[in-house]
Image 1: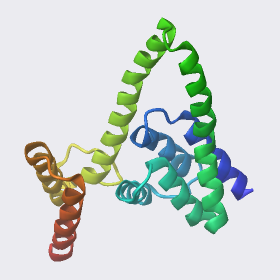
Image 2: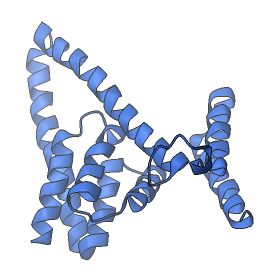
Image 3: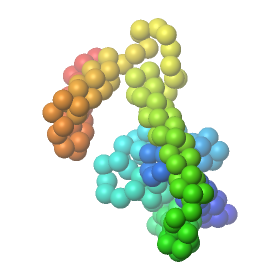
Length: 188
């Protein structure tokens, strides 16, 4: 039964996650945290962090991690296949259709209509992670005492460094991890 749940959950994620991994995060959170309760919100944030740092798409990395966490190696395989299957079928069909009908205005209009939705999904996922990072699992609060100053400092510094100097983002992530780890270990 758990294998079927894993397959169907990640099949849905693979089926409806247009726009790449960042756009899939709200769908993954809905299935993994809200519906099935396989992970807590904090574990989900850790999952996204690990999925971002490891090679490969976020949705597939998440499927593999959750599948392993819930049902071992068979769960990882079933979750990953469930996540990849819709994309494989859709991309094959769309490639054929696009080659045949690429000049139609309807096709160009549909592609243009998807762009704002994808941006909204990515923005929603980013804001969810920002709120969780700055204010914790309880969510947004107006009180300054609920803000994590180390997280705010790391966020602002990381954003500044990325925008101003444009270094490799992996270096910024590693640096933030080292500085954050030191701060959280040394500060009470």
